[in-house]
Length: 494
Ligand SMILES: Nc1ncnc2c1ncn2[C@@H]1O[C@H](COP(=O)(O)OP(=O)(O)OP(=O)(O)O)[C@@H](O)[C@H]1O
Ligand SMILES: [Mg+2]
Image 1 (cartoon, protein in one colour):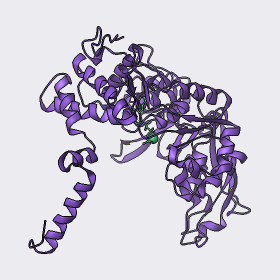
Image 2 (cartoon, protein in one colour):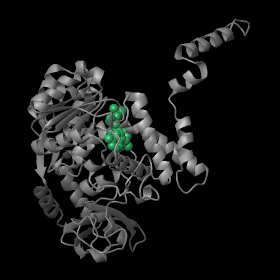
Image 3 (tube, helix red, strand yellow):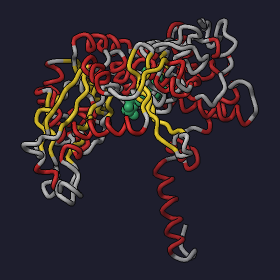
Image 4 (tube, helix red, strand yellow):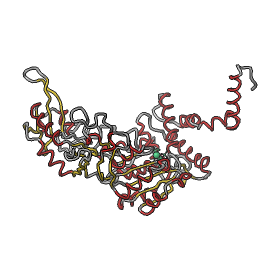
């Protein structure tokens, strides 16, 4: 690992390529050690969190790291048709063992073959074959024992949306290449016609192959069961519900213009939509800018207390309003975030609920400028570059310039000497722009000059206005007089 000494000499690295990026999500969060300690307790004791601080210092990262450290969900939630009262669909919770049993007993038709006998793309999609070396293995093994490839990590799921994109697939087995329970494809039969073939994983390296007629029977059984999975078992239990509407937060039942008519309408159970509070069941519900949720905060409080919340049509004029699924589970850890000036706008009982069963944490905006923390910033640079995937690594000098900028920003923005800023989203912006400049230059690495030019170019607009006009006020005045002049057909005064 790099060891930066005297000022911005970065010890023994050639470039940020040599910096090791930790695998643990929590270890990728820089400078928020106090928050991390609380997160660890929150996971163990199932506590709620309120994160307070300015934008871009890692509030969302802390919440996601929390979710990534929780155990995988154990329940699938379904709604079933209720023949006695279709407008009150039946709620069903089912665990992993029951699901597997269901899968095995479900299909009694077709014939069983070994994994080696099915087309390779089918085996890959079912999760029995390594996408890299072709080695056959069980679906429960994420990592290929022969070549070490993660069978499901080819997916770039969430890579752009989360700093943990590469780990999420490993931990929660989600993405487009994840083990599917069945794969459907087509083949040309002897009669020259195209028919559907269904491959189902039945466990222990065995696959059931069914043709159209076998499959027809199963479809019929599924339809007979008349159910809708509203919360699947294989989910990433982190739900970001910032700015959610009432229906997005609490769920809804869609309108049916044909009022559940048996032939042309859609049955009530099929129209049930879960809310964010339900999707966060067994995971984390994260809401940034919490005070902006206004009256919805009281619903969050109820959901937190009751750990269940009925789903009903929320528009009184819709046919969904008469449909209700009672007590749908929503047992989540709540993480709210806001900036300092908005704390007073959080519903007092909600705050008290968080304080009574959790922690309020003020995040840091800067950290001491010492050798250890410079190393952490180097890690941040390497991490951001890897995650971006489109910019080159930074040379020792380039990285040094970013660290120098972190020092300058701690002073300029927070008035602190000998500190390094933790307003890292903006610092990441400087890095990315420097990366783009390096690419334009066809440079192999981000060099100090690229960072210098990037700092010049990435000044906030207020800065640019002050530079050009002397002050924000002067800039606004100029703008107004130009408009005035234009209105007067260029005959006005300036
Ligand atoms: N402490 C940190 N450690 C590592 N990276 C960070 C940190 N803080 C911010 N970043 C980088 O900045 C990005 C934005 O951070 P994040 O979304 O967590 O900030 P935030 O505090 O939630 O901001 P906002 O209030 O605007 O939502 C992250 O994806 C990461 O790339
Ligand atoms: Mg955020």
